[in-house]
Image (tube, rainbow, N blue to C red):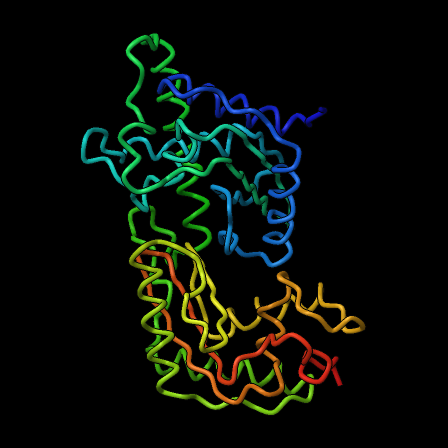
Length: 337
């Protein structure tokens, strides 16, 4: 199997770091590389840095600004730089500040897929891992300290690399989220308006898109808002991205990290799935389910809520009556007027 220079360099960097911690080497997988490429191109097209929803693989993402060339190891070293904040030992657990590092050296991961995509002066990198890492209760035997056989000079070299790349990483983040650009200033909150104002703005975005397809406007249902808030808080608490097991209502979910989230952004991301919807077939498609629920004609009410954890945000929207009912797509998902 042929792999390009970026993929091979990314693999080599992973395995160099994994060796230091006694983790077996990863192997490149073409299917995983294609999977990562699809999401990297999606991020570049949307100019947004966020994890894929409902992902069955582990995932690390990275963005660089203003660099004409990027090696695979640049992204990997940036992820590995989080090692300085990780607490090894019996109390080791998942942390928002070290999740990239722990996935890089996760002992149980075997296969790697990686890709990059450009958008202007920005480069997006996505890496996917199988089996995924960062499982609660499994850190103690999957994220080991530096192996005692590691040569001191090798470790010194790696530390210097980490220090250099950590600076690059902080610069990227500051350009993306900081208001003043001061290196020591904490990133702003991902959402700065109230739940009620956010819901109102999201409703307006829904109805703007629905009007483009001739479906009637939605109204807010406070009960649905409570349902959405409960599930958003659940996702933020567990650091997960998955749909609620409660199938009574329709549901769209959204996740973002490291940026300001405005009320229109979730609806726009869901609506952008229209590019993959086949109006001639008018059937359910797992890649367009957010879009079809958003404009579903028979849906009358919606409730929207968000929850945050650090610089991460989860948004949940619930719909009544629910959409995406087999056999009813042609009447409920009309093309643009």
